[in-house]
Length: 455
Image (tube, rainbow, N blue to C red):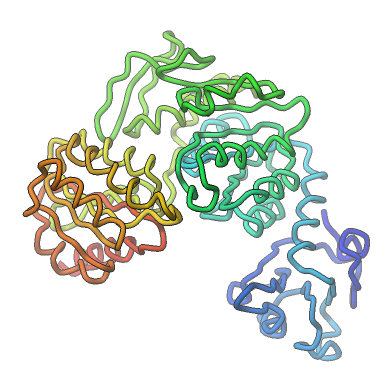
């Protein structure tokens, strides 16, 4: 439990009003304030949350944490608690650090170039067969989202958090707040390579997660990832490996799979039927299986009933026109694009793929996009819709490799594609959407689903 008076010590703050009130339900968006919430006025590059302090109080916030009192008439809100600190972001993080210190259960932290969210969902689902689990919601995996996730912890036994990053030092900050008992690195790919310069630097940034890991804690890694496999013996913490190809502590074999499911054996003894397709899902299950073993969960299969995919991540949507949408528009990297293309490639139906730019690649952008072309061809994609400046290189390379250019459509932005795509889609088609979040392919999905509702 956090009390207003705790902020005096934790954040060197000034508390005006009731110092004994409990602080919970922290919110940083004044538009989402509900009765008895605590509003934290974050100062960003383009907006100053202090400006919305009075709005938050009028909507029912019982307390506000602010850094600039000039936007509020304090005398007007004598029934509320006003907390003034120097830096609201640092205060939010310090409160999360304190809340974590009060948590007696385990904390599991997940990072990696791709698969953080799907791994989080799988691990959380499997653990729920024995424990009460709280997990990161949506994309709350950064310097704001992770503290808010910790602060929303109630009486759960286990907290599962994602840690995202774009630059060095970001995971270091997050892991030293969350202080995980178990860390997971899903893989090292090319996401954010434009910022970090090389995959080796990406590995270095991801390994920052060990800085906050409990001394007796463990790191779970995908041993089939080349860089993790190569450097695992350099890690001082206990390492648990999962894999399909390289010899690992937990391995999947006898794999049978289609687009929507897979079956396999874990360590050649336990048979698993997974209600998801693709190798990525098998890796996710192996991570969850390993952690369940570590935490004493015997019935892993039981937890699969709790498995739910997060929004816009390989989300299956049926339309009234008879075609199926695979909405994987949340984000993209080379590895996740490959995973999605390999997945849709298993379908016997006519396959339509809408790909947009992979962002934050800098000088590597053209070469990485061109490297996707052979994957498109290998998976026998029937029609290719490309959105953005970089995605065009997928089409140019595919044409160079013999793909029929008549089946490629180019668009500068997502809104240009609506009518053409709608016209081309037919009954029984399956259509995949994949790009970095900034390309807004989710808007095409929304358009098509709305059209489906109309008919």
